[in-house]
Amino acid sequence: MPTVYLAPGVFGAGGQMFTSGGLPLDEGLVYTSIAGGTTPAATYTTSAGNIQNANPIELNADGRFPDEVWLEEGVSYRFTLRDSAGNLIGTYDNLRGVNDIGLYTTAYTRTFLLADSAATARDILVLGDTDDVQFKDITSVGDVDVSGALSVGGNTSVDGSLASDGLLDISAATAGQIQFPATQNSSSNANTLDDYEEGTWTPSLGGNATYVEQVGRYTKIGRMVFLYCRVQVNTIGTGSAQQISGVPFQPAQNAVWVVGKFGSFAVNVVNICGHQSTGFNLINMVGATAAAGGNSAQNVFGNSANVEMTCAMEV
Image (cartoon, rainbow, N blue to C red; front, side, top):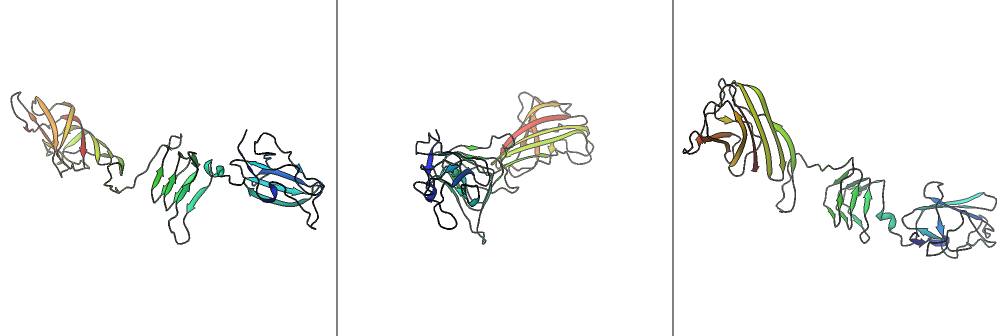
């Protein structure tokens, strides 16, 4: 059985309808439908919500409802009043049960722009216990604060803060995306994600070196960047034998590039890695040529040399 609320005003309990001439509407007819249309909508005779009124409801001889009229939670109604011959007397739209807030905790299909003509910020505050809220689109220049789960089927644009005490659901098949500004809006809050970026870059040895492959990719999440580099030289020419340039980020602290694969190096090494110093966009190849030797800069690049490596750095 549905949760129901008493219809407002004269449509609720003991209401009396009149003709345009002020006489009781003897055996008048009240049709109930979904607001804005003619799709029939059920009403109920008691607060138990277990017995439906007829539709249309036939008024008695003095124009009164034979029973109380209770409306279903979350439904917006249209009441159409006609005389016994079917002539239209009046239409009353967007009627909701008294104290029914259910309409505000179910699905909306409208876009809300919460700003006055002076663009003063306005907030969205959703009342209710743990009811979920669903919107098609939200556009707000103020805050959006939801006590419950927030599900948005369209776009959400908020210039203020977006807060939900429940689940923020972006799992719909056409959703699942959060867009950050092109320029990071840094936050000092340890629990705030303030940036995300994906992109490509071109590793280079400079000079007139030619290549079979130059591949660079990165993903930035907050202040951490995860990078990938693959270089295969065709001819080294005047290119650097030891440095790769073009890294799109400078590390906050010295960063190590882990070599996963290499071949055709100009020198034989027993270990090799890339080293990127704080504040620089260059990778220096360092390693050892003997098992007992220490790490030093190595001129590994020559014709046909190739290397593949990754790095995780803080920026």
